[in-house]
Length: 368
Image 1 (cartoon, one colour):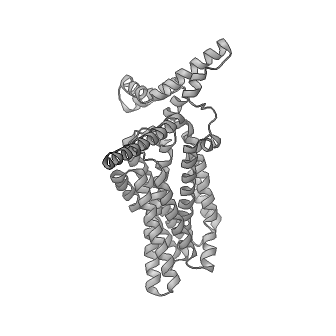
Image 2 (cartoon, helix red, strand yellow):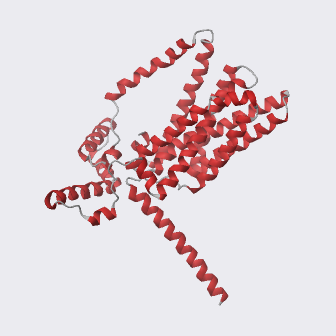
Image 3 (spheres, one colour):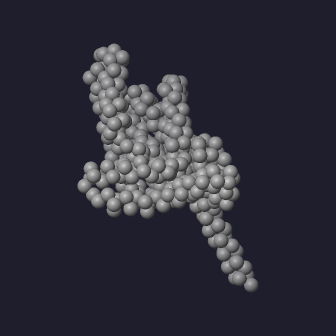
């Protein structure tokens, strides 16, 4: 929702700011747990649950995403929200509203065609076939729509696996931190603290390489460090090895934390507005599956000390390889409708085909 409320050049900054805030709160969690280490765990849960009450009052403050409202044709409500935002920020409403209309022309066009279709249906009792061919039907889009088209299906499967292994590794590193040498509260605090430099690293990498390459670099780096941990733990159990595994695990946390934060930014950008809720829903649900399995990594570590690091590292390596097949979204407008994704894929395919034909023709000329 936040990404839909900010322009393309501000999304990275907003996402990394949220990452810093998340890191700060997890560090506070470690400190509170240390202070309450002699209290019953139920009191600890109560302390962390009480601040959530504040979220109830956001119901009267937060407004709906106007991109979603445009995509659904709710122009009047979108205009009311933009007018309120312009008043709060002291800017000219007409200029802001004109800019919103220009940036959402496709949504306006879809809404106009939808209204015309309704009029024709009411008048003639038939739906115009030519409009159905140009714009795929976009009512009640969900998992079935994502799996129906090859482009969205491949994209969704890659995203699901990336979220699954990232979540498994992220929460697994937190839960296995207590099994590392040293105080468990300190290890948890240090693991959380690694997310702070990770947020700044993500901001820099996103600025230099874009979304996809940055996430691949972070997951790949985490794969290398965690596979190294698996090798070291399989060798022996000396003080030097224990220290090295702690350091490498913390470095792995920097990579996987940055990748996790990057996926929260990248995933809603590759889905159109009409599919964004469904795309984020299936991605987040897959991540929760990884979170469900992450506690069992401690049981695996009790039996095979190098097992969790091997699972984390191998999974991250596969995920980074699969992400190479996805498109880049850096500094691009969020897609509004499904046909934008499908048409862009067809255009890329035609471009690649034309390039191949050009290469073949040039080779033929050289041979002649």
